[in-house]
Structure formats: structure tokens, C-alpha cells
Image (cartoon, rainbow, N blue to C red):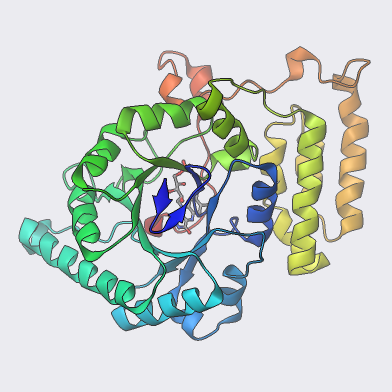
Length: 370
Ligand SMILES: Cc1cc2nc3c(=O)[nH]c(=O)nc-3n(C[C@H](O)[C@H](O)[C@H](O)COP(=O)(O)O)c2cc1C
């Protein structure tokens, strides 16, 4: 598949996860393979134009961090246009527009026509951006406000006419937040609404099988993975392999998880400085621990680290404690192993334990703009 003129080596994308999908995480995931196109966390267009320190850190990149989309957030057309130009100057391959859900609930102010007004306004903002840059502009949206206002197909069509190069769609409404399951029929409706641009489906992909299921059921050109990459940073490589060969490779073992955890941590420290990077990593490391098996001392220790030495000390004492759950060869005994990941579409609704295991937690944050 392509986005604009860019041919892609994989149809798997990293979804923006504010607070996580920074340069250290993107490089860590890219190194593991299977991922081509990655997106920054959302960046406020005005802050970027003001060269705000945090905004510049959010768009920081490196030559290995390619191809890269910078995701912009804002509603002032001139700011969005100028920020898109800045993204191009910064070397981004595309600009993605965060449209969490641009259409306000319109019941009280005139129903469908008001909705079309919003769509026209959005299209005009997008046209202003597209006219100002040479790189492709893409958009990320939800299905709509709620089940009675599934506006994504209309919006996608309007955006395609305005010149948007691809649509990313999270298969939930804004009212849903992160509850319930992803509506594959809703994603399919977006795929069917556009003429030729790629639609990339998103939501709840935690296994290679779930990615294939979404591709098969919706006809989308690619899938974008967010929280699934927390659990399984190898998900892109494993899914890419599965889609090409039909062969499901096993999840990586504990030693490989530890190796990648260390690499991710080291990148945090290099990027943010030792103390700040260590503090920030406190919220990242527990995601790795979700697939460690017994991990309580790791989880309680890691949220206190302030340095490389602290980090290594937590690992050393955790490894000593963990040995009691392992066999002579050092592997976790079967009864302590984490349950296999179960894709949400495969859940047996009558089996509560399966549901608990596979429900994907949502890290805290401004859900209304995601
Ligand atoms: C912690 C967190 C931060 C997010 N930040 C963004 C963001 O910056 N921009 C955006 O478009 N979506 C954001 N999202 C939404 C995700 O990109 C994605 O659409 C959603 O999590 C569903 O995909 P998943 O089930 O694969 O995680 C965020 C989601 C989470 C959980």
C-alpha cells in the first residue's frame, strides 16, 4: 500500500498514544521489525508554532525514525496550516490531523444540516493545510459521536474530496470512550465510503489474529495498533509474519522481554536525561511486566526509580525473587505463566475469566481528544 507517493513495506501502523509514542518508544518498536509508518503523540499546533519546548520534544525524531507522521491537533485554520508547513520543514513524511471526533452533538442546534456545516468547516481547514504543503495530509477519527451519529463515512468522503491521502479510523464512537468492542461494520462503512484512498482500521488489536480479522472483516488497507504494542512490542513483526505466511510465531520469552525493556529504558535516559527519563519510565515498565508472570516486586520497585542504578537494582532483586517460580532451566513453570493473549473478537462472552484476561486497560488521559 501507499500513502500519497510513499510506498510502504508494511500495512501495520503505530497508533499515537500520548505520553508513550515518543522517539524512544518508536525506535524501540521499529528495531523489532514489522512496523513501517509511525506517528508522534498529538501535538498542539499553536504550541508547535510557538516552539514550545514540550511540543518540540514531541516532534523530535532521528534518521532511523522514518517514515514518520506528526499528528497535529487544533481548530484554527491558519495555525493548522502553518504548523503543517513546520512539520514538513522538520522532515515529517506526512501530517496527520487528530479529529478524535470533530462533529459536535447537534441535536439541539439543527441536526444533520448543522453537522454538514461542521464537515464543510473541517474540509476547509484541511484544504488550507493540503494547499500549503507538499507532503500528504491524513486524518484520524472515531466512528462518530454516538451510535445515532456515525458520521465517519460522510466525513471520510468529504476529506477525500478535500485531498486527504489516508484515513485512520478507531472503530468506536466518542460516547463509547474505550468501552465495549470495536465496531468492524462501522469501519467497513468508512472503507466503502471512500473512492480510492486507503482506510486504516484501528482498535483492540492485541494479536496477529485480531489484525487479520479486522482486515478480512472490514476490507481496510491496513491496521493501526496502539495499546497492543504495550503488551507486545513484537506485535508488528509477529503480525507481519502471520499476514505474509499464515504462521503464528510464539510470543517472545522473558529474556527477550527484559532485553527490550532495558533498551527502551536506555533510550528514555538518553533522550530525557537520567533522572527525568527514569521517572518517566515508571509508567512504561509496568506494561512490560504484564507479560512477565509473577511480577509484584518488580511493579512496586520500578515506580520508585530515579537512575540507571535504581533500574538495574530493581531488576536484580526481581530476578532473584522470580527464580522461585522457575524450573532448573530458568523458564517459568507452566502454572505461573501469563495466560495467552486472547483477541477480543475471539472471547467467549460466557467465560468471565477470558474477558478479564483480555480486556485492555486504558492509561489515564484526555480520552475526549483520542
Ligand atoms: C494513552 C493513550 C493515548 C492516546 N493518545 C492519542 C493521541 O495522541 N492521538 C490520537 O489520535 N489517538 C490517541 N489515542 C487513541 C489511540 O491512538 C487508538 O485510537 C486507541 O487506543 C484504540 O486503539 P488500540 O485499541 O489499538 O489502543 C490514545 C489512546 C491511549 C490509550
